[in-house]
Length: 93
Image (tube, rainbow, N blue to C red; front, side):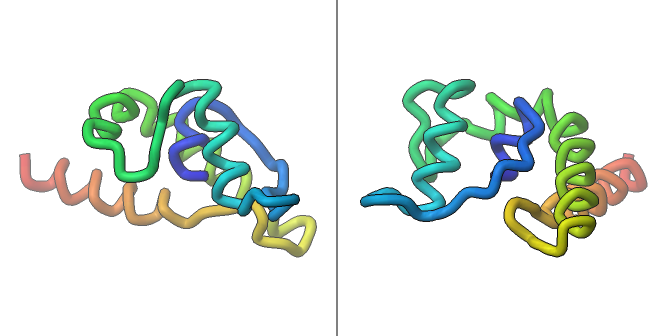
C-alpha cells in the first residue's frame, strides 16, 4: 500500500476475495503504475524515490480518512518513519 501511495491516493479497502489475498489486491493496483512489479523487486527504491513526498501526503490523507471512518484499512504509518529518516539525513548534511 505504501508503494501504491507513491503514484496515487486510494482509500479503497483491500480485502481478500476469491483466491486473491488483500496483498494480491494491492499489487494488482500497483501494477497499473509499475507493470511487472513483484514483491522484493530490486531497484524499487530508485523507481519510486522521486515520489516520496507524494506518498507521504497520500498516506497522511488516507490515515485521516481511516480515522474518520473508524477503520485502518487502508492506512499506513510508514510515512512517520520516512519523515524521521529524512530529518536525520538533513541534520547530517
